[in-house]
Image 1 (cartoon, one colour):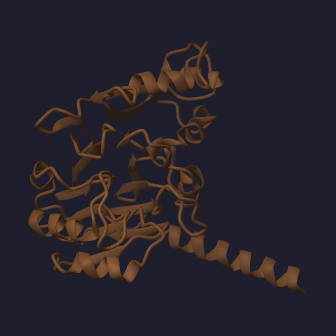
Image 2 (cartoon, rainbow, N blue to C red; image 1 turned 90 degrees about the vertical axis):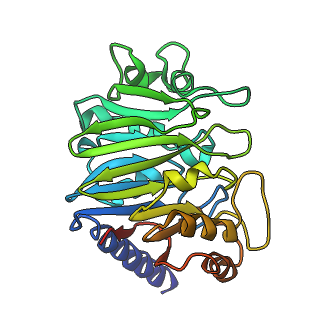
Image 3 (tube, rainbow, N blue to C red; image 1 turned 60 degrees about the vertical axis):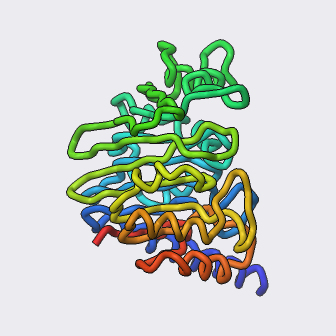
Length: 299
């Protein structure tokens, strides 16, 4: 009997996830949270990943943390529709599912896939070097995916790789086509090179901050007027970190940027109500606490 009840609960959960996963396909422009969790294992939250949906198609994938390939499937997104894959930085909770997404990708898509990531420094390789260490046909960790970085054969589609200098003071355009324009700018995340992304399409602007400590005022200008601003709330109220902005700082940045809607994600194991309350001390607009497979439209 116990085993039967467990199976029924799992079945109900699967139906619920599948139903919620359909919600983004009917919106002109929307952001779907594929993974809303932080670096620690969480039974309810995959690691960081986001989809930008345009006219019912998943056009941009930002970050590929652990669990992304599964959530991508649950979302009913089609890899053939993706115009750009964008990586914020090379911490595992933002990139570790990339090989899973690329594996057998040639069976889902024929065209090369544009992909952008950050420059490197003494503690993190630049993005092309990172990809070659993963996929090079002779020396990579996943040599069977060598086709992704230029080999003649392999089990993945070719990647068209762009690198953004995180030290550049002004935004860099990383994609412009099919009614979608995406720019990127460096953000402070300790010593790890990291990028934020701003996507504009159909008269709507979506900004995805990913991890940052909130100390660079240029980000406020970068996020100015966003219809949807996704920011990470990775630490508890009243705490500080060289890597992540405190909830009160997240709220101030969103308010100063004039964001029309704020989505909080990358949520850690802390008092969530207290953290949200700190955000609301500064931010007075509509606020969404992110969850996996949650869709936020731009209306």
